[in-house]
Image 1 (cartoon, rainbow, N blue to C red):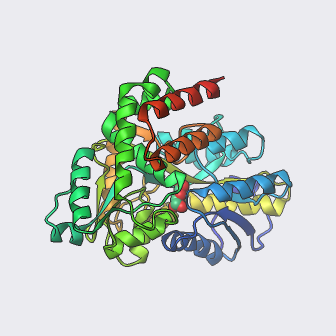
Image 2 (cartoon, helix red, strand yellow):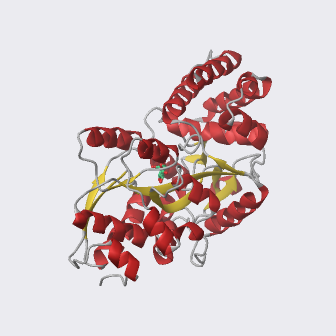
Length: 414
Ligand code: BGC
């Protein structure tokens, strides 16, 4: 069945009512992520359209971005791709992305999105992508059964988390499920920075790139706390992917994980109840703060009218409240539109939704550095490399690392 389109949308689209075909690039390949993609795929196909899947393994999307660059350089980009945050600005600046402003204006999309979503997706004033959902990054996930069996309380600060982790380790239980990928470590670092340093420190260091904050005593404290957590990683640390880490958490092979709420897609796919079997808490010390990661699909410029039509139809489908509800229930995120009812979402999503609104009011919504919402991509990569080298070096010096961060930012500022 085809969607009922408004007259202007019909005019924007070609009049041919044939099946539309679209190729979509993404890195949603874990169990939970694949279920979310299936929601989009099945709603698209239910309207008589065809879906060409271009999925690239690798959490965090680094490999997907490398492939996208080589396809774009070969003048063969996919029609649609999962692209987000600062990279939207970078790709749009190079002239690769279709301007979705005419659709957005006519269909009232700007008003339908929370301000932070609107701003992220229209870096030059015009919409260049449609949002699929809002993930919160600063979460601590806890194996409830394990904590209860050990008589442990949920840690409210990083100091408490370290004490709990030491107790777990003494009992032979791995405290923290995490793998040695720079982006996984960056997610952990970001939560430590928020919890130990607070919102002002985070803003000054990573949004304003203030040299004194980047190299100062607070940064040194944050770095030391971050590296202290190296003692609590699993024996499989070197090769562990984020979803395998979640699997450890689910099965009691580890007690905690610090990761964005795409974890929740994984839990549901494995029939674990988020907020019950696995507890969700804002990462220690970051209650009231919300570091966000907005997922979106951008459309690459095409000339073929049939392809243009397919893109428009896909964008229109993604912007439907019914899609947003189903997709985000599977993905672990919350809808990226204002008026989507939260019935049917799990406890952690309800909490995320409430906290998002509160942070929006209080000005404590913070763009995630680990998830490409804050820093230019080369700088983000360089920062993640410094952090990961430090985390893995037992003789690493926090003061020297802070000085390295300062130099890095200084050279990036030119
Ligand atoms: C994406 C999420 C994805 C996660 C793990 C993040 O960068 O925004 O949608 O689930 O990576 O692959």
